[in-house]
Amino acid sequence: MPRSSCRASATRGTDSMEPFENPETDTLEAHAALKKVRPSWDEYFMRIAHEVATRSTCPRLAVGAVIVRDKRILTTGYNGSPSGLPHCDDVGCLIRIVDGRESCQRTLHAEQNAIIQAAYHGVSVTGASIYCTHQPCLMCVKMIMNSGIEEVHYAGGYPDPLAMELASEGGLSMVKFAPDEN
Image 1: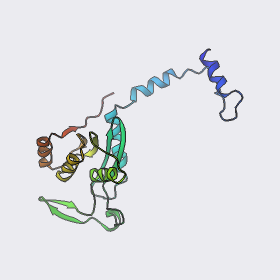
Image 2 (image 1 turned 45 degrees about the vertical axis):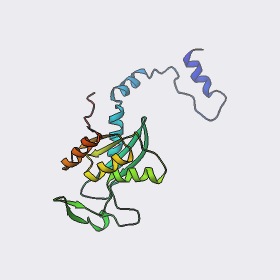
Image 3 (image 1 turned 180 degrees about the horizontal axis):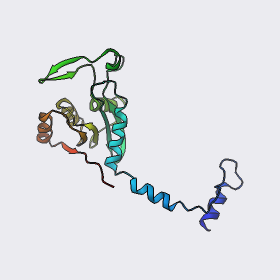
Image 4 (image 1 turned 120 degrees about the horizontal axis):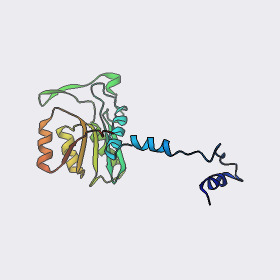
């Protein structure tokens, strides 16, 4: 059966779908244009991490994280206050000096929230990868390692060289994200 008659017959005799105005329309060029901008899996998940970061409630730095296994999203997380507590956006940041630098103590980090969401919902992250908008800090690297996540993809830097040292020592793969050049 020719392709156009197959399309036309799919709507014949039903009220659930309207027929194509012109079933002979060739969408090959439009599809080819989309394929040129189709992101790699790494870029796709990193874009989602950046979108997740828009939910952040800390004005100092918006961070997002996406935990992925087998090209499937398991959980997401963004930095913000624990459930039931006021957000930095509403009451201000709770700043303390930690390891010689200012740090907001009101919020959980995006990586922590993504791991907590997995635990809360009974989702194993063993063997997964995590995509983060920023390099994880030392505490997050330790949590990532203990959760069974094997690989970290991060876009932006973070001033915590000890986190990178510990990740290397523990065999945690840390991959600096470089967007595809199409």
